[in-house]
Image 1 (cartoon, one colour):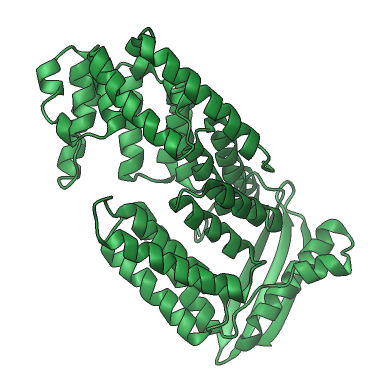
Image 2 (cartoon, helix red, strand yellow; image 1 turned 180 degrees about the vertical axis):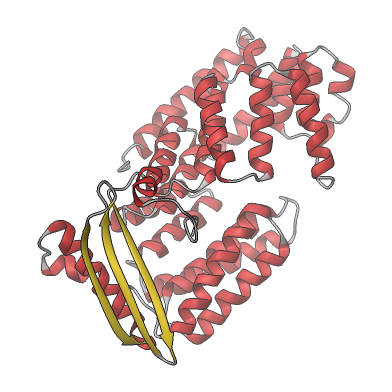
Length: 423
């Protein structure tokens, strides 16, 4: 949709998306009759490889999808085996209306995932429920409402009584999805996300890996696997998954944003700057702006960073930027100002802040608490402890070396368990 009504040429689109071919199409509708015109174009020389008109009724829309998919594959690959043709068939609900509601549900979920707005959550929920009512046998609707409830679960604070409710809803809807179609890539993908929310990492990895095996061209599966690998502390593998997601969908800002933050952890500032700026080219969410603020601090542009915090406070009056400001005070040695609101900060924020202030005992106590929690859930802090510049003051502390060694072992174990992913 980015290119709709734009003057961008086919070669420019090919370069933007890093693709060799582009499918152009138009749809005309009259009553229940539709005409779909499709053409496959080489992005280098604009040569038309294949084109065809399809005159059908609206109820045949999924058959048209299958026809177009098969003809494009044949044009590109010359021959298709019977198995290839079978695998290319669209997994479909029984009604167009159900499919439209399902797509709308996914759309509002993507908006909710970005902004956390309850209005978008309720819209997404109502669309998925409508899709299920219209077609009770389409497994992906059940899987996606389970995923919506998973997002809701993550957005709620740990202390919320509602969290358990949404965990139970996830499990119930996903159970229905698995009964309807246990071999669906989408069902396996979302099964992995639910397992991850329950800290069942072995099961989560197996489900995510299965989803990628079934459909290796879905960028969201790599994005979810990246989230999983980040949880386990395998940050370089995480970045590789995000790179693959970018290859499959260069217009999603989140993988650029995430990789920009990881580059900062590893002290790779030019790479971080490129990633954050690329994310900004696509979108301008608060998450990207906070990452840009972090970049300013890593570049030691502290005055500019303080001015940027003031700008964000004006723009987002309901958001809290106390920790971002506290780190600048800590770097400047203003301990009283830095510690002003520390009680509201997380373990990780406290460990970084105390380290920046050179309060070694306080920082190591926070690191110890985080370490115990991460160990319990088989997560590794190794690369963060080893590379994050905010912990520079802690690396000579005698207890730090022991914690680092423990998390190095956990990191190596996780690499052995989760390194077997097709990236």
